[in-house]
Image (cartoon, rainbow, N blue to C red; front, side):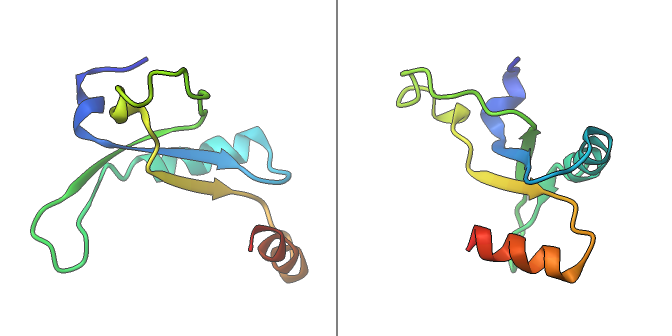
Length: 93
């Protein structure tokens, strides 16, 4: 569902990667999505952001609906050990 504010914000998708419980994912998602404005380094203005936890595939209208294109991606996962983190890092590099 979209609203008027979506036209004034940068869309960012937040996705789980690997094995993470739904409860943990949404707990972290809530904390991430609480940040709605960021200021680039050395800037006096702020960027407004909105987050989505699902990504709808392009519908053929994306050239006309640029407000629907995601400009950022945040991934969340559980890493119980340093070795698990290294493995994930190698997969994503």
